[in-house]
Length: 329
Ligand code: TRP
Image 1 (cartoon, helix red, strand yellow):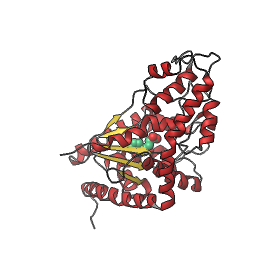
Image 2 (spheres, protein in one colour):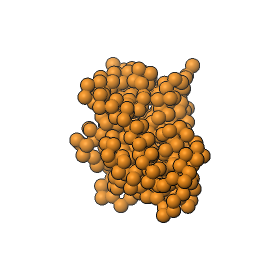
Image 3 (cartoon, rainbow, N blue to C red):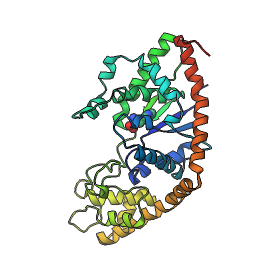
Image 4 (cartoon, rainbow, N blue to C red):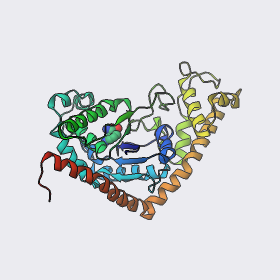
């Protein structure tokens, strides 16, 4: 019997922000009861595009620390760094041999990411094969991803089916779980765009590790319209609507309740309340994060995660090695 296995791959790049937390990370902690939840920091995917080694190292630990600080319990879930488990690269290689150039050439993300670049690595082209390996090693049933990754999960299903039909049942076919676009947190600078991890303008996003002063400043300077009414109207008042959305998510109040709460009040007052709410949200998360980083606790969690992930993945890899005809040691 195969249970529910959820595999999330997280890129160790950019700055995780309140949009990531309110939209996804907060649910990770809540969803841990059912089945096995795997959180993998995909540093091997990160190097498919140029990285500064020291920044990559720091970001990898930062993202891992934030996943735990956001409430993922390493006793219940599995958290590890992709490069700590060599099975990912090894299965990725094997899967390469069951993927055609034709299907890889159809990957739209590769086309977008390689456009107008001087140097395009083979790793970037091959990225979906490694992603398929990540997913297939653990008999994953669900893959929470953005719409942009749907095609990669389809490719994963496709290579799994091809392998299964040639060698017999080996891989479980995963399904992509794609969130509906509602409830998105938008940029504080341009509230018609999503809050982004990689926005060059740091004023657009409240980072999970931003100091309270910076949080207050960013929210006070957030783009709003020239009106005065605090009313939820995404089309006419996208900036105010975005702040209202953030406030309602943090406080667990409905948008209608927020409207009532701030009826007849000024933007300034509302912004102060929103900033306080976000500072209050981040305070315990940042305290847990600092504890994990300074105590060496994070390294222990990651070492344990690497070991546990290998115990699961290695059986699958050996099954594949056997089936393709490698001499077993
Ligand atoms: N490609 C994913 C992204 O950019 C990250 C990723 C790598 C991933 N391996 C994965 C996501 C496995 C889900 C499952 O967001």
